Amino acid sequence: MSETREAMEFDVLIIGAGPAGLAAAIRLKQLSPEMSICIVEKGGEVGAHILSGAVLEPRALDELLPDWREDPPALATPAGEDRFMLLTETRAFKLPTPPQMHNEGNYIVSLGNVARWLGAKAEALGVEIYPGFAASETIIEEGVVKGVVAGVMGIVKDGSKGGDYQPGMELRATTTLFAEGCRGSLTKKLFDTYNLRAECDPQTFAIGIKELWEIPKENHKPGLIWHSAGWPLPSDTYGGSWLYMFGENLVSIGFVVGLDYPNPWLSPFDEFQRYKHHPAVAPMLAGGKRISYGARALNEGGFQSIPKLTFPGGALIGDTAGFLNVPKIKGTHLAMKSGMVAAEAIAGAGLDSYPELLRQSWLWSELEGVRNIRPGFAKFGFWGGMVNAALDTYVFKGKAPWTMGHHDDHSQLKSAADAPRITYPKPDGVLSFDRNSSVFLSNTNHEENQPAHLVLRDPGKWLGTNWERFASPESRYCPAGVYEAVGVEEGKPALVINAQNCVHCKTCDIKDPSQNIDWKTPEGGGGPNYPGGM
Image (cartoon, rainbow, N blue to C red; front, side, top):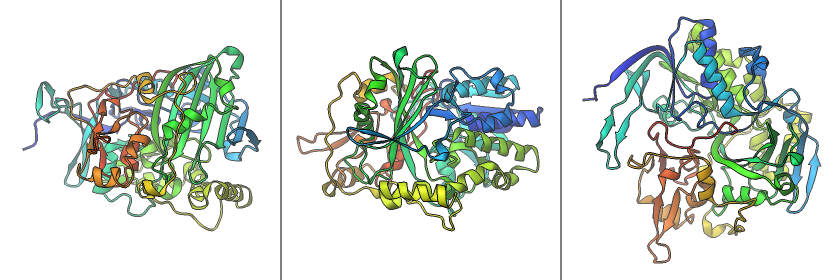
């Protein structure tokens, strides 16, 4: 018998208080003020889990709140100079900025602050927002999504109910919108339950690792948008960097690595740390102080990887559905637009009209026009990918008579014996740092006595697969030191999972070679707590 819980009823329930979920709520209230709308957010506050080195294209925001510039989010800085750089180990060459990366009219923002600002706008319209309220289970009755269970607290490590146990609540709604972000834990189950990925390519992902720095005023050029490709990544690995100067002497600096990389010895975290020592990068950070750190996975499949978006009782919006323009290095405007279109469907002809309305929108044509750029790097490598991107952009103008496909990421690793080992320099504590000190700056915390939210489906697989074949790649692709191989010197290797370190990037759930790691929702409020500048 299922547990008896209190229940609350709404017209629309939204899972996730990111740009997509908040835009959907605001648009619904604009169209149907009488609707009851609830948003649940697993972060301790709205914006706590929002991480992005963000340049915001305001197209969707202009449609949603046309007068937003009169009361902008904190730290919004108009975009200035664009630089697109090709790095070798010792030099930097300025390349023509691709048209997708032109940022005139855009804004460098703290995406967490944008979420907080949108949250206040939503609440002013009457939307109920419950932060620190993790949705841990989808309610499905007779094949129809009816809402979620959220707010379960007090389960202890052995799975029993502790003295402060709370069963949570059933939040029920006529329509539930899932806006969980990349690799949402409930959304992953919906993919299987409703076979939503049957007619699309596999999703392909990247990990983005970010730091926030405060630098001397004389080094700060407000509005500078600096991207690079090339060093330190090998030519068979997709990725690059960003560096954005905004606010009062703040710098958002980060590094992205495609999770289809083949070398199990590669560590995205350490690639980022050594990147900061490049002769073109280090001077921009000189004299500065690192003040925050975080990481998250990114959807990179684009147009080919869009799943079926609706199912009985609900729909997918935002990054959980994969709306990111990789060549543009932007997704917030797409996430917001998808939420707005879903709201227009609900308030109009009904949720079933959402996919068709989306196909008629600028979101669809934007993603279709860049569909061949990211898979070109997977197919042809770095240099071939650059040529393909140029041809697709300047010759075919996004209308090539073919569409390249994607592969999944977890199956791309070579065995450790067949890949070159990588030796990374030790951090100097000035420009480069270790994982533990980095996680400290993310303000990550989990209730110590709760069950681990990172679970091996079959613990017996780790030794024969992850250790013997791939030399424990999870100890390198995790940017937070969650996974450690211990007992190696004694000839008894075993895996230790330090779940309390987890910054909720979901990389392990994606990249594990045997898909043996499940990221589950921890108690509400757990995980990172990113400050306003992130």
